[in-house]
Image (cartoon, rainbow, N blue to C red; front, side, top):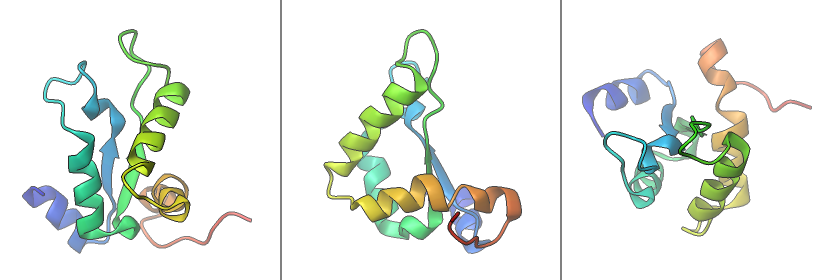
Length: 103
């Protein structure tokens, strides 16, 4: 984790991981296991997962996001944990604080 990510964690801002970083289109791709290990280290309460896909050389955002969620889920992530990082945490970037689940 770099110093900016550590600072964001101390400031209660979620660490954002984009699945684009796993593709060959990314200038410095990283392995999925690295994302998984960082999530395990800091906890799902401090992470947001997004796709940033849609480039012509990559799958569509919906297909790619589903594919990578399935792959990261195979690394023993619970459905609840995935829900936190893709649904519960993103609004915190907008409001800058904890939010209640949408009814």
